[in-house]
Length: 308
Image 1 (tube, helix red, strand yellow):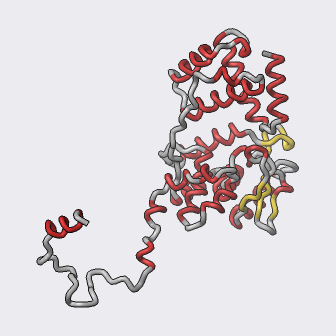
Image 2 (cartoon, rainbow, N blue to C red):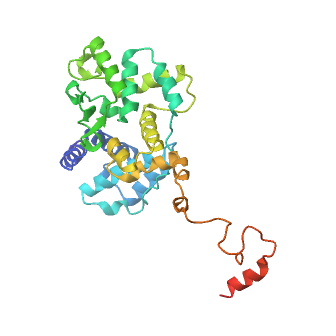
Image 3 (cartoon, rainbow, N blue to C red):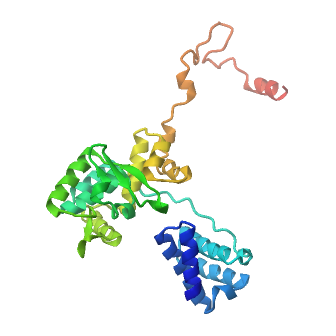
């Protein structure tokens, strides 16, 4: 698998895949090879089918199964053997509704932070909607206090964009910088100021905070990002702008927030509400029926209707 792995890494790098995706996909191919105890080049369609049957029996989410499928499909594309995947259908991804904290829960959570570093991290994630993987790569020069923005240099798929820097968050970050004195990365590791803080440390810190704050929802750090988008939608901002702030390449990824908050759809007024001259139950002449249906023969009217 050594030569094959190196070749796949090279092909993925040339194709522009991120380091995280390369690591994930190559681990999938390694696990696949170990399961059958042979090279993936020696596999038959039946071997691939059996492997996915095995995966389906494990407590894996639809998203995880899709990653396995994408990784194997890409590998066999690189070695010109895409026909080997023909026995396995494309996995269907379930439309999961993202967990969201309401504004009161956000307030409780942030006010419960005991350390300035924790409060700065979680306030920044919620107020800007950035991913935790983007936060750990923020450097001091990426923050623009005048334009109230943060330059995201390593977004998903290595995309760059600007994120919001709120006034309250800016004040908090300045306090954090004054006390912690970072020199390169805004949030650095305990191993040194030139090393960014780890994503796992942030995730573990969030779970401790959530429990101590009494938040019973099954929230993660990523829930802060979901909450950011949902609250913007509730405040009336267009999905297009939310898409750009989140760094979504496809608007379909942003549409999930319509499912999170169905009230957004129900709050849309009917176009009839905008037509001021339509009268309901009040008619222009005495020959037309108003709200009194005492003389209305439904059966007769129905027969006339279906005969037309």
